[in-house]
Length: 284
Image (cartoon, rainbow, N blue to C red; front, side, top):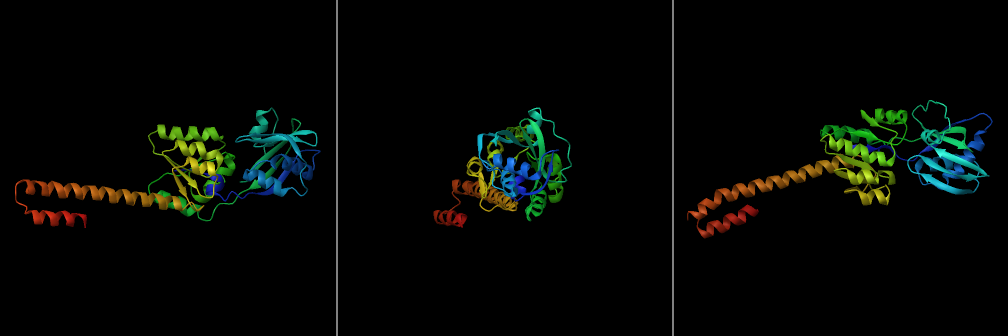
């Protein structure tokens, strides 16, 4: 069972918890420019950055979303890039190594120069650890899959009891992870809630979307969990196994009953009245 992190294992309601501006940049200016670009994004990290800014952000032009990486735009005459440290590194901007301490880093570059890093944090849903334990009890292997940093992902995984972590993946790389697991001969269920999970949900043998997630994720999935509680996943699997068990039991008794009764009827040993009663009793 491959579990998306943000909004699935965690609440997805992030909040700003720290900042590390570069030399010559004030925390207020760092937040102001980052919030200007993130204001146009619907990602939970972007909403946390906007909420953390004390002053209204300036208008932004030339906004461009970078799927799985961040966003960029022009604010106050400067080109501002906001997102994962990888987004800045890919553009040739050197990002210093900072200890996130379980938080999600949001790096900021202004006119091609590193301006600082913001830190946001998410909280694990209270039922996630119990849900993971129930999945293990069903004989399933939970895997945490996220675009977040490895350190943040490992901190969340340790908190809910997940051993296998695949972090820092782009949306299209989530699909590749699911395909690799299937190529190993494993039957894969994917649980997610966001636009970035839609392709992976469609690729998995079983796609389960959180009902609190996006319409795109729900449309791409095979099964929608009406409440945003991860414990619904083991419940759905148990219910499906019980249903399949009932189907197999019905098939067994139907074949056994007829295999036993047909030779008796063919040999003339069954009175039509008894045969009719036996047929009705089989339905009961």
